[in-house]
Image 1 (tube, helix red, strand yellow):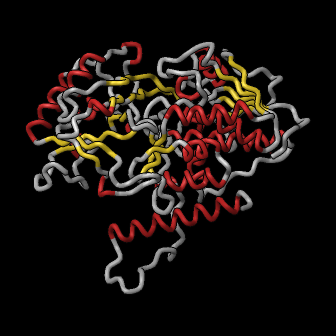
Image 2: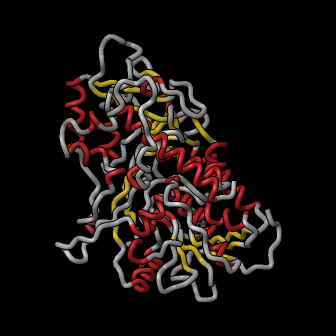
Image 3: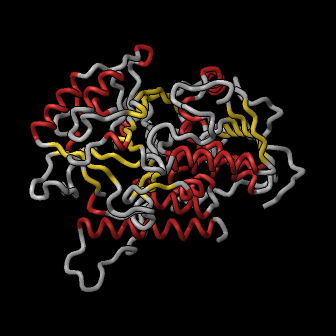
Amino acid sequence: MTQTSSLAPIHVIGGGLAGSEAAWQIAENGVPVILHEMRGVRGTDAHKTDGLAELVCSNSFRSDDATSNAVGVLHAEMRLAGSLIMRAADASQVPAGGALAVDRDGFSAAVTAALESHPLITITREEVTGLPPDAWDQAIIATGPLTAPSLAAAIQERTGADSLAFFDAIAPIVHTASVDMDICWFQSRYDKVGPGGTGKDYINCPMDEAQYNAFIDALIAGDTTGFKEWEGTPYFDGCLPIEVMAERGRETLRHGPMKPMGLTNAHNPTVKPYAVVQLRQDNALGTLYNMVGFQTKLKYGAQAEIFRLIPGLQNAEFARLGGLHRNTYINSPTLLDRSLTLKGRPGLRFAGQITGCEGYVESASIGLLAGRFAVAERRGETPSLPPETTAFGSLLGHITGGHIVSDDEPGKRSFQPMNINFGLFPPLEPGTVTKPEGMKRFRGKDKALAKKQATAARALEDCARWLGR
């Protein structure tokens, strides 16, 4: 790592996951960086602290399985690339079955401390109200889905294109001591042991059929917060409010976040729960648990009343109730080139959720790439793009070109926020996956798993080669 540099600084606007990762990659590659963060001067509707890389919604980075899960592959690629976000996540992990979940305060503190102590990083607490001035010849906008209105307006004016918007919801957090463990029990689904886990990493609240139906009725009838100025704004399907899912069909939740599969009630092993609400550890002390999949736009009073209908949560005390905020993202396939540069404005890049990726690690990974691309240009080099076969390359491909333009409806866009998934990876070469010796049938789940494993192995091999490892 270069401790000093005569190169001009690169400016990064936004100290969330993408901006923090971009700043780290730039500095670690020997180029000075000025990180502009408005929190401390101006807050947002969703953030609660001034810490960098604050986790607003869940505390989960999702699966850490790099052998057959696309998210786990992205984790592994980021670790190969020296990701600060993954380093902080690994250092602050809490048990979560097969997932990588973190103590959100410890995670933010670790990222903040690393950035504040880096000799090539200057953190400036200020709101950037417009596009970067021309003097900032290399800059990255990583302001996230909660971009300040003035900057969002400047982006819209400069690009001549409307930003799209969607709702993002937050799940409640419960004080662990208020959960009735005579009703609930600890268990990970299928007893799966994940990073730092034991196979008993979730609190499970069981429901019989009558309790489930009463809960669904209450959800549908619940009083929700109105956002008249946002009417017509779509939800991102990966973060639907619990009551919106309930409205889509009575069985939707029982086959979604409340599915009972892989769980056995420790208090009544012979009776299969009709539905199960899971709580996941939210801090290192284990004093707080969040309600998995329970993002909501219910009003606070309705939340407390309805969620206490869940067996085991009848006396629940909430450290934080759920909420809803508006997210925005640009039409990246039209506006950005393959190196995330705004077309018509050399040196100005976008990174993170504002580009149309969804999820913590996805946002951070695009920040990682934007930072590396900016470093290359600062050095007078052409940015090296990750292979399309990698998770990095697949996600980048979705953001900068993964959309369909309708012939029937000119101007209509199909580009939507998306998590990393194997559907974004290029197909394997024919013959890559063959039937294992001794296996009579090779189809269905067995063949699908083998394809995922081969895709993951190819991605990590190609990523290591791209990084020169």
